[in-house]
Length: 324
Ligand code: ASP
Picture: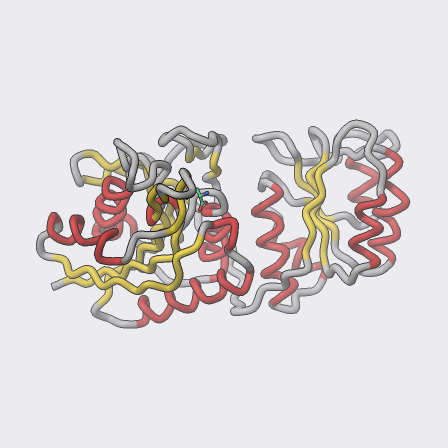
């Protein structure tokens, strides 16, 4: 008999509407969440590990480390063929990406959740769980790193992002699309993804800031982070990787203080590059020591920088990680 471990962390998949509050809160126990699914699955033993039951906005770097530990413990048992993590969808892509870059194991790891809570018609928790089980059991899922399964699609954790606040079809990989689909409990892969570079660390640095650029902003928030002991900064720049010129003194001050700055774009797709040579353009930023974060969205570049700093990597090693 094959075993699959489900690590439960909370999110809408484990929520109901509280009649007093009139809104959804964490409430489902493990057997309520998995009981029906267990009854449906034949020939596979499901082992639940209830880690916590929190909304994903309450997930901290420390909690991500605990999730990683639980996943690695489960993977280490030869009887377990893979692991599923249930998680709130708001920060699901961050935890999934963290697991992807920090766990080096060929067994499938799937992160899933739900957009509708258990009090709503069309609750998608059971659908997503059964699709996740099918994905873990599929031989072709081995070696693909951490996967995100939602709405009958399999996505690479490195590429997937939540795109809509409400839709059950919210998780998309905007650059290249899903890796495959789940049709009637059968997983059909259409493409494979080269695996992400790994950062082998069990510690992530929590003092890494994410700063978004906008027309006319100044560098005061960057100065704040420098003055408050932040160890790294990710800047979500404009377009191809440019910033308003009034942020430059603060950016240079952070660099002088040896605080790594990783530049990504606030655009939904596309990588940053030094295409522009005007004041605040990407060319000058990269020449002054800002690190090119490629096509990652800010929230994932932040997770990578947290892991890199946590692992004690130097500037060159950080730069290497972000290179395609
Ligand atoms: N707010 C919820 C959470 O992230 C959303 C969800 O799980 O779908 O915990």
